[in-house]
Image (tube, rainbow, N blue to C red; front, side, top):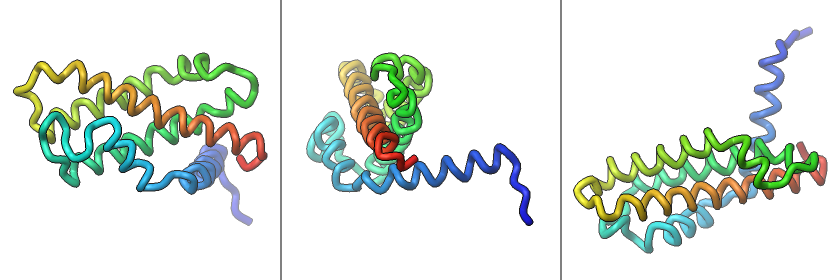
Length: 146
């Protein structure tokens, strides 16, 4: 007989839930999101490299999972805005991480004029993936797939 600790059991359930959420996420949708928010093949005139694309993928996945994780509060009656307020700190961290990642790897540091617009696009990008994860998670809870 194997005895699991509470934290270990919680982590196993969280990994299973995240795997179910990620089934609905496609690489093509993430690429389309990158093109939509950051241009067809450039970040402020700088060609998109695989490194930049991977960084955007990482942030999209983290944001998507964050929204999915907090979707249980929406299922139990809280509005989407109230739930987003709960995870504002984590969301801000993702926005800052993406912004700084693009500035560092995209070498946009000399173009200060684009910084505010780039930060705004990073913010909307993270928000879009958070909402997508939130809606997917809510559907999962409604269908009792959690």
